[in-house]
Image 1 (cartoon, rainbow, N blue to C red):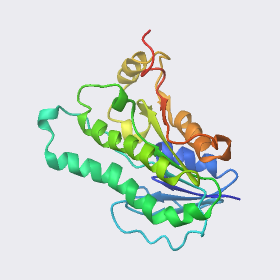
Image 2: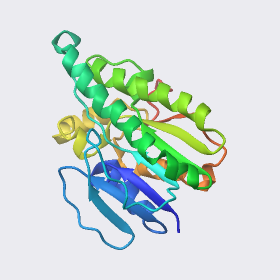
Image 3: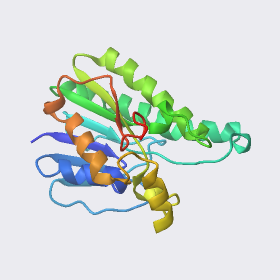
Image 4: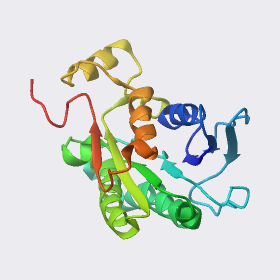
Length: 229
Protein backbone atom coordinates (compact mmCIF):
# COMPACT_ATOMS: atom_id res chain seq x y z
CA UNK A 1 0.00 0.00 0.00
CA UNK A 2 1.34 3.41 -0.99
CA UNK A 3 1.10 6.59 1.06
CA UNK A 4 -0.10 9.95 -0.28
CA UNK A 5 -0.49 13.43 1.18
CA UNK A 6 -3.27 15.73 0.00
CA UNK A 7 -3.06 19.30 1.31
CA UNK A 8 -6.57 20.73 1.17
CA UNK A 9 -8.20 17.33 1.10
CA UNK A 10 -11.46 18.11 2.87
CA UNK A 11 -13.46 19.87 0.14
CA UNK A 12 -13.80 20.14 -3.62
CA UNK A 13 -11.20 18.55 -5.87
CA UNK A 14 -8.98 17.68 -2.91
CA UNK A 15 -11.77 15.75 -1.22
CA UNK A 16 -12.59 13.82 -4.38
CA UNK A 17 -8.91 13.04 -4.94
CA UNK A 18 -8.58 11.83 -1.35
CA UNK A 19 -11.52 9.45 -1.79
CA UNK A 20 -10.15 8.14 -5.10
CA UNK A 21 -6.68 7.47 -3.72
CA UNK A 22 -8.02 5.88 -0.53
CA UNK A 23 -9.57 2.99 -2.42
CA UNK A 24 -6.17 1.28 -2.57
CA UNK A 25 -3.77 3.51 -0.63
CA UNK A 26 -3.23 5.29 2.66
CA UNK A 27 -4.03 8.99 2.36
CA UNK A 28 -3.08 11.74 4.80
CA UNK A 29 -5.40 14.64 4.00
CA UNK A 30 -5.33 18.06 5.61
CA UNK A 31 -8.23 20.30 6.50
CA UNK A 32 -8.19 23.87 7.73
CA UNK A 33 -11.71 25.15 8.43
CA UNK A 34 -13.72 22.03 7.57
CA UNK A 35 -13.10 19.36 10.27
CA UNK A 36 -13.15 15.76 9.08
CA UNK A 37 -12.96 12.48 10.94
CA UNK A 38 -10.43 9.84 9.90
CA UNK A 39 -11.91 6.63 8.55
CA UNK A 40 -10.62 3.60 6.67
CA UNK A 41 -7.52 4.50 4.69
CA UNK A 42 -8.01 8.25 5.13
CA UNK A 43 -6.17 9.99 7.95
CA UNK A 44 -7.20 13.62 8.36
CA UNK A 45 -5.10 16.25 10.10
CA UNK A 46 -5.58 19.96 10.66
CA UNK A 47 -3.04 22.24 9.02
CA UNK A 48 -2.53 25.72 7.64
CA UNK A 49 0.06 25.66 4.85
CA UNK A 50 1.32 29.11 5.91
CA UNK A 51 2.14 27.96 9.44
CA UNK A 52 4.71 25.39 10.66
CA UNK A 53 3.37 21.83 10.46
CA UNK A 54 4.64 18.90 12.51
CA UNK A 55 4.78 16.05 9.99
CA UNK A 56 6.35 13.58 12.40
CA UNK A 57 3.20 11.44 12.25
CA UNK A 58 3.79 10.62 8.58
CA UNK A 59 5.52 7.43 7.42
CA UNK A 60 9.12 7.68 6.23
CA UNK A 61 8.07 7.24 2.60
CA UNK A 62 5.49 9.38 0.81
CA UNK A 63 4.75 8.31 -2.76
CA UNK A 64 2.80 11.38 -3.82
CA UNK A 65 1.83 14.90 -2.79
CA UNK A 66 -1.01 17.05 -4.10
CA UNK A 67 -1.26 20.70 -3.06
CA UNK A 68 -4.94 21.56 -3.56
CA UNK A 69 -5.05 24.82 -1.62
CA UNK A 70 -6.25 27.79 -3.65
CA UNK A 71 -8.47 30.83 -3.96
CA UNK A 72 -10.42 32.66 -6.66
CA UNK A 73 -10.64 36.44 -6.25
CA UNK A 74 -11.83 38.27 -9.35
CA UNK A 75 -11.75 42.07 -9.35
CA UNK A 76 -10.50 44.94 -11.54
CA UNK A 77 -6.73 45.36 -11.52
CA UNK A 78 -7.00 48.94 -10.26
CA UNK A 79 -8.75 47.74 -7.11
CA UNK A 80 -6.12 45.15 -6.16
CA UNK A 81 -3.49 46.32 -3.68
CA UNK A 82 0.10 45.15 -3.52
CA UNK A 83 -0.81 43.49 -0.23
CA UNK A 84 -3.53 41.49 -2.00
CA UNK A 85 -1.00 40.17 -4.52
CA UNK A 86 1.45 39.27 -1.75
CA UNK A 87 -1.22 37.48 0.32
CA UNK A 88 -2.40 35.44 -2.68
CA UNK A 89 1.19 34.55 -3.62
CA UNK A 90 1.85 33.46 -0.04
CA UNK A 91 -1.15 31.13 -0.02
CA UNK A 92 -0.84 29.64 -3.48
CA UNK A 93 2.92 29.60 -4.10
CA UNK A 94 4.85 29.98 -0.84
CA UNK A 95 2.48 27.52 0.85
CA UNK A 96 3.17 24.93 -1.84
CA UNK A 97 6.92 25.54 -1.65
CA UNK A 98 6.93 25.17 2.13
CA UNK A 99 5.00 21.88 2.05
CA UNK A 100 7.20 20.42 -0.69
CA UNK A 101 10.39 21.35 1.15
CA UNK A 102 9.13 19.77 4.36
CA UNK A 103 8.10 16.54 2.64
CA UNK A 104 10.98 16.29 0.20
CA UNK A 105 13.01 13.78 2.27
CA UNK A 106 9.98 11.47 2.47
CA UNK A 107 9.30 11.84 -1.26
CA UNK A 108 12.94 11.08 -2.07
CA UNK A 109 12.76 7.96 0.11
CA UNK A 110 9.99 6.51 -2.08
CA UNK A 111 10.31 5.03 -5.55
CA UNK A 112 8.77 6.99 -8.42
CA UNK A 113 7.28 9.72 -6.24
CA UNK A 114 5.06 12.38 -7.79
CA UNK A 115 3.98 15.94 -6.97
CA UNK A 116 0.82 17.55 -8.39
CA UNK A 117 0.12 21.28 -8.24
CA UNK A 118 -2.88 23.25 -9.50
CA UNK A 119 -2.97 26.25 -11.81
CA UNK A 120 -5.84 27.68 -13.87
CA UNK A 121 -6.85 28.03 -17.52
CA UNK A 122 -6.58 31.79 -16.97
CA UNK A 123 -2.76 31.70 -16.98
CA UNK A 124 -2.40 30.67 -20.62
CA UNK A 125 -5.71 32.20 -21.76
CA UNK A 126 -6.08 35.77 -20.55
CA UNK A 127 -9.38 36.81 -18.97
CA UNK A 128 -10.34 40.21 -17.54
CA UNK A 129 -10.37 40.57 -13.75
CA UNK A 130 -8.05 37.53 -13.35
CA UNK A 131 -4.75 39.34 -12.71
CA UNK A 132 -4.59 38.26 -9.07
CA UNK A 133 -5.14 34.54 -9.55
CA UNK A 134 -3.25 34.42 -12.86
CA UNK A 135 -0.15 35.99 -11.31
CA UNK A 136 0.18 33.47 -8.49
CA UNK A 137 -0.87 30.47 -10.56
CA UNK A 138 1.54 31.52 -13.30
CA UNK A 139 4.31 31.34 -10.71
CA UNK A 140 3.19 27.80 -9.85
CA UNK A 141 3.52 26.80 -13.51
CA UNK A 142 7.09 28.11 -13.53
CA UNK A 143 7.79 26.30 -10.28
CA UNK A 144 6.44 23.08 -11.78
CA UNK A 145 8.83 23.11 -14.73
CA UNK A 146 11.90 24.18 -12.77
CA UNK A 147 11.27 21.76 -9.93
CA UNK A 148 10.58 18.89 -12.34
CA UNK A 149 13.98 19.47 -13.90
CA UNK A 150 15.73 19.69 -10.54
CA UNK A 151 14.11 16.60 -9.03
CA UNK A 152 14.32 14.34 -12.10
CA UNK A 153 14.61 11.40 -12.37
CA UNK A 154 13.64 10.61 -8.78
CA UNK A 155 10.48 12.71 -8.41
CA UNK A 156 8.00 13.78 -11.08
CA UNK A 157 6.27 17.17 -10.89
CA UNK A 158 3.18 18.13 -12.90
CA UNK A 159 0.54 20.83 -12.77
CA UNK A 160 -3.17 20.77 -13.64
CA UNK A 161 -4.83 23.86 -15.11
CA UNK A 162 -8.62 23.55 -14.87
CA UNK A 163 -11.31 25.89 -16.03
CA UNK A 164 -14.13 26.77 -13.63
CA UNK A 165 -15.21 23.67 -11.72
CA UNK A 166 -18.27 22.98 -9.57
CA UNK A 167 -16.65 23.16 -6.13
CA UNK A 168 -17.12 25.27 -2.98
CA UNK A 169 -14.19 27.43 -4.14
CA UNK A 170 -16.19 28.54 -7.19
CA UNK A 171 -19.57 28.72 -5.46
CA UNK A 172 -19.88 32.50 -5.77
CA UNK A 173 -19.41 32.26 -9.54
CA UNK A 174 -21.89 29.37 -9.90
CA UNK A 175 -24.53 30.43 -7.40
CA UNK A 176 -27.56 30.12 -9.68
CA UNK A 177 -28.74 27.95 -12.59
CA UNK A 178 -28.36 31.00 -14.84
CA UNK A 179 -24.71 31.50 -13.87
CA UNK A 180 -23.98 27.80 -14.31
CA UNK A 181 -25.54 27.78 -17.79
CA UNK A 182 -23.77 30.99 -18.84
CA UNK A 183 -20.41 29.58 -17.79
CA UNK A 184 -21.16 26.24 -19.42
CA UNK A 185 -21.82 27.92 -22.74
CA UNK A 186 -18.36 29.51 -22.71
CA UNK A 187 -16.81 26.03 -23.04
CA UNK A 188 -16.77 23.99 -26.27
CA UNK A 189 -18.09 20.98 -24.33
CA UNK A 190 -20.96 23.14 -23.01
CA UNK A 191 -20.78 22.09 -19.40
CA UNK A 192 -19.07 23.01 -16.15
CA UNK A 193 -16.26 20.79 -14.92
CA UNK A 194 -16.93 18.60 -11.89
CA UNK A 195 -14.54 17.79 -9.06
CA UNK A 196 -14.25 14.20 -10.24
CA UNK A 197 -13.14 15.33 -13.73
CA UNK A 198 -10.08 17.01 -12.27
CA UNK A 199 -9.49 14.50 -9.47
CA UNK A 200 -9.23 11.60 -11.91
CA UNK A 201 -6.44 13.39 -13.77
CA UNK A 202 -4.65 14.20 -10.49
CA UNK A 203 -4.96 10.56 -9.41
CA UNK A 204 -3.45 9.44 -12.72
CA UNK A 205 -0.52 11.86 -12.39
CA UNK A 206 0.19 10.59 -8.88
CA UNK A 207 0.17 6.98 -10.04
CA UNK A 208 2.83 4.84 -11.73
CA UNK A 209 0.66 4.86 -14.87
CA UNK A 210 2.02 8.36 -15.58
CA UNK A 211 5.64 7.40 -14.90
CA UNK A 212 6.91 9.02 -18.15
CA UNK A 213 5.18 12.37 -17.59
CA UNK A 214 6.86 15.26 -15.78
CA UNK A 215 7.22 19.02 -16.05
CA UNK A 216 3.89 19.40 -17.83
CA UNK A 217 0.95 21.78 -17.46
CA UNK A 218 -2.16 19.71 -18.13
CA UNK A 219 -5.20 21.69 -19.32
CA UNK A 220 -8.54 20.23 -18.28
CA UNK A 221 -10.97 22.93 -19.29
CA UNK A 222 -13.73 21.62 -21.54
CA UNK A 223 -11.71 22.70 -24.56
CA UNK A 224 -11.65 26.39 -23.61
CA UNK A 225 -7.90 26.97 -23.99
CA UNK A 226 -7.53 25.21 -27.35
CA UNK A 227 -10.80 25.41 -29.28
CA UNK A 228 -13.02 28.07 -30.83
CA UNK A 229 -16.41 26.66 -31.78
